[in-house]
Image 1 (cartoon, protein in one colour):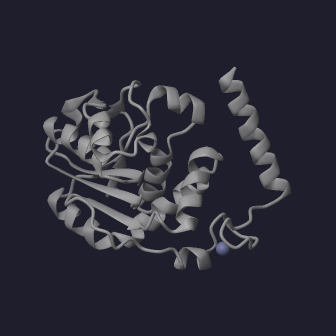
Image 2 (tube, rainbow, N blue to C red):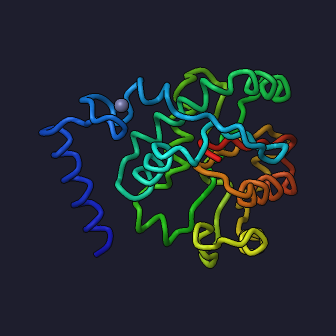
Image 3 (cartoon, protein in one colour):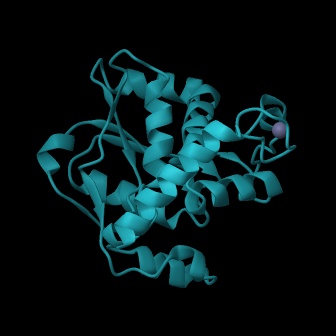
Length: 224
Ligand SMILES: [Zn+2]
């Protein structure tokens, strides 16, 4: 039933998109969902994150908040692809350094997974859409998208519902598992997420990947 509703909703969305082309969610201009002018005015984050995590925009920027909300709950995957491209363009220098470490092998791009329950409800994983946009910027073998390595268990409470930092960290502990550790042994990995708040989710994913034999793992998030 849920799946049928989702397919109907998606088809309706696509038909509406043809009849009434997108308007920018920032200024209302007839353009992409985020016009280049609004993108240029997004507030970059200047708040520090954890050492191995880099974030691009300030989550307190109302347009960033709105974009992430649209991406998660309004079936707007193209916004995710756009953010993926922006991540790539903004972190070129960091990517070059990671490339050196990967010694000619593709850098694995791993989106932070959502639980199976949530995936069925939403129809897609927003971080995976961002990761796709990120990988599409390079058509050579610089990146390889890996969506079947890192998995999330079903039983954690959504992080957004917990306001206490310690509770958040505790909640995410052991939330991930790896299916095929052989695949990532000795590899260089960029983990991708939409928003990082305490860094807990990303750090936990990085920890699990490293424990399973990955050589170097860093995290890129759209907002912090
Ligand atoms: Zn705009």
